[in-house]
Image 1 (cartoon, rainbow, N blue to C red):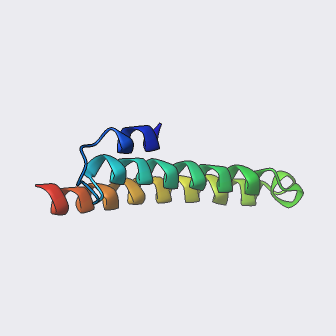
Image 2: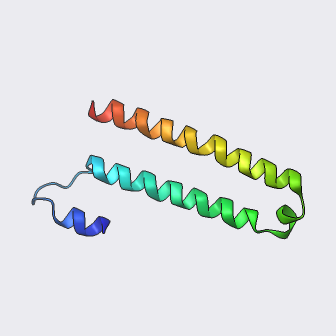
Length: 79
């Protein structure tokens, strides 16, 4: 889908547009979610309530920070 949108741009646009940055951000969040899921399925984590709590806490901290960083970047770049 991303590549088809990129192909739909007029010729001569060879730079990264705002939509590209939005897609990259979504890809990063999906990758982060996959890492958290894989780590959460490890036997060590499943048997350890503290590890589960720390993993959930890490997700609750990392996601808002990532969102704030991308909003700052997009604001600085395009506004």
